[in-house]
Length: 195
Image 1 (cartoon, rainbow, N blue to C red):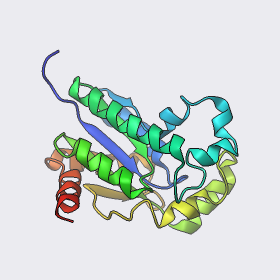
Image 2: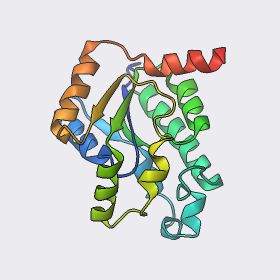
Image 3: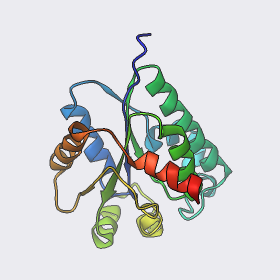
Image 4: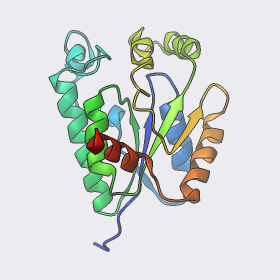
């Protein structure tokens, strides 16, 4: 081990907002390799029966409150991301921060690391249109997540996938990475400790 700490970039947004497309564009743009270690990867680690209702409701299907399986999954994901960064790997992750406890957990684990929090935004009507077109998402999930996912209100940078291509979003994020150290998780941690 060389003692290097890897960067973490978390892309947070609702279902169908374009996180995966931005993630792929970022992976292609970044000079160093970034491991994809976000919520989609962790969900696909579950037994397939958990991807359908009624078991899906115990993961993320209810959107406004995750079940015990979803809670454990997200907490494990956060710790895996921290471990990867501490071992020197760069991490790129999609996330759906719909639970205040998840924001608190992420802030406590990432505030002392080079970890960037990126808001991936998109108007609700565009989200719902994308959701219908995809046919691989639970209809209504984007609407349920819409007012929850950005409720914490703090980001290092935000992009809108309705007005920028994934490549343009990746360029905006890359500019922020070159502009200096991340602050969002430190601000969230300070606010949580003060409150």
